[in-house]
Length: 229
Image (cartoon, rainbow, N blue to C red; front, side, top):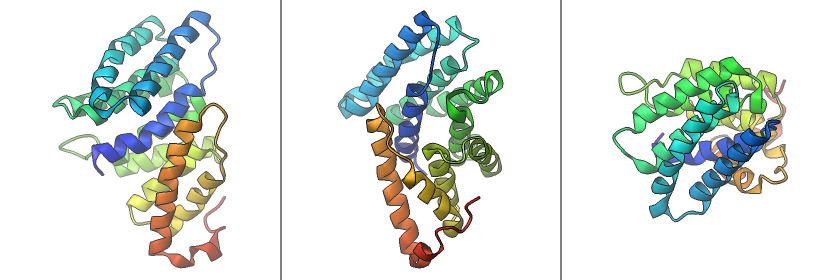
């Protein structure tokens, strides 16, 4: 899976993750929300020729937020998010090192608070592990990807993101019938208020994924309940 496909599919989830965070500290809240808005504007609304430059500007801001609030898992996650998306649009020589840095940030965030933002650290780690190349190029590992994604499903079994990304993982491995129930769950999840841009992007990707599954196994409508638990 190419980096462009990786960053497009993962970005919709990542934007929801940071947008869905409840923060109590006013100073943190203001800075976090400003970075969140800047990230959204840069990724979704900026012309393609400007995306990398605008995201690069954000790198300093998210790193400083993390340095100022190391006890907040959200600050580690938003830095990982910007690194991932920047790597997806910049195509620089440092793209893989940035992704590795993002992985380390997410592992730290998971240790600080594994439940923050509905388990987004688990989902994002899982998505990274199955979408980046494996050794010796990078750290891709399907077994770890499956473990992280299943952990997210265990914690949040009806969430759009946990079901979508596990379904996508299964489809990428040719496990179409096993993927179908998870994709159906994701399809049933509502578009969330205030998050229409990110959720609609994910729903578009989901529709394409379901179309692919139906082409492979057109009988699946008769076994919608298979695999649901």
